[in-house]
Image 1 (cartoon, protein in one colour):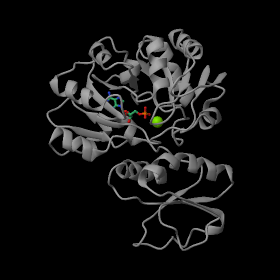
Image 2 (cartoon, rainbow, N blue to C red):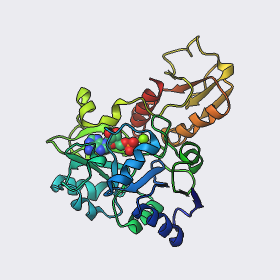
Image 3 (cartoon, helix red, strand yellow):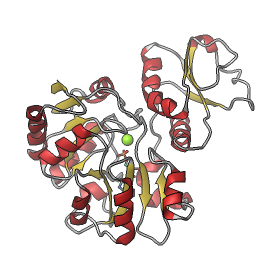
Image 4 (cartoon, rainbow, N blue to C red):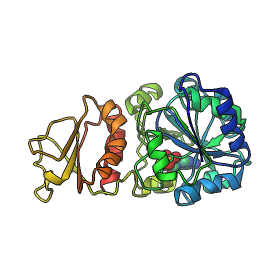
Length: 321
Ligand code: AMP
Ligand code: MG
């Protein structure tokens, strides 16, 4: 594997060109985005896309997001109606993925055989430079082994996938720390398939209507939401401050705590954040640190649902299941 440190704002064009040619030749390139690190392949090359599934151990029925470097590229991959065009104008580049009717040439390896495709333009200069240089949409799930916490820095990518990728671009820690919000715009309403970096309140204000919750239908609409996910090797328990005591079955002296409210128990390691957004940025890395420190159990505080808190709740819930 090639490993390069790059400047997020001003990545070396030679390194970008090298990673782009790996993508064009059907290889795998891990790269930073504003949400988490991605594991990229040429999204129009079925054999390259298959390598993503193999490297991650990802179930093949879980479709991938195609990453673009220009809003206009969306029209060559999906049907874009007025509502989709307005949404793109308002939210891209940024942590919002749109599920739209796919054009027929989008490989079924990307869509998992669905008639829709998920598209996003990341808000990260190095990611945009790479996608632009590759001259293709880049299929990219998070650069972790399937089921593991998403990587928010290059060390986590190397730990999970170092022996399975061709190149890793390291631009330091990400800003958001959780994946993009995924909405489905193929029906009349706006369906929230996965809460994420773009807050639900902001989307509701933009659309002027409440987001619909797919409920059980989510399984069909967004296959990825049904797997155990984001989970460290240690058991994760949820703590609701003010409502509950720390469960008696947990021994704080061998456990790590993460959250915003200092717990009364004395944990082996306590990591406190001053806001939901810093909690979101630090949670996955915190999981990995607790693993590395040889702790036995992780207790995480249940955050409020405002803003990024809704996405944090979703990830915590799935890590704890
Ligand atoms: P990941 O890249 O692993 O963060 O996950 C991408 C998310 O987008 C998963 O929850 C997928 O199920 C979802 N997704 C990707 N493509 C589609 C699609 N065509 N329809 C519905 N959900 C999708
Ligand atoms: Mg993922």
